[in-house]
Image (cartoon, rainbow, N blue to C red):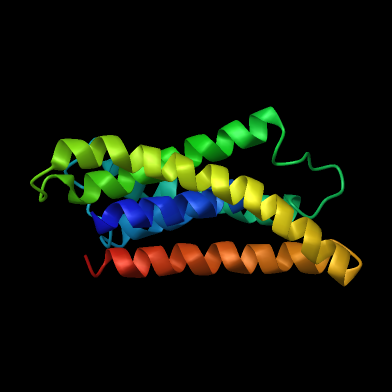
Length: 164
């Protein structure tokens, strides 16, 4: 059931940065650290998918700093983050479900854990960033810290997944 904790953490990453979590999932699948090759999600390991999602993640990291970028708590960005977290939860659950005795429960709870993490990451990330931006006197340093946090948590999740 440790995979559900990883799905929750990856959901938090989705709440911080929608595509960073997906980029780490695709790279983990590509490097065979996340075994999805015998699932319907095997396409995530293809080079084109990896590079497209990585480009989207880099674009998001850049676009997040622009003043015209809408708040993550508005409906569409919030919904996209929940979908991203759920999808990451599905990927993580599928990677272990066939080897677990309660595989159906894991397949159902994985996306829920990812969605829950993304809600916490979205709301908590927005609050923390606002506090940090006020402390720094501007938003940019807070945004960079948030980027670094999202990347570190995602890398930690992928690392831990290789140990399960």
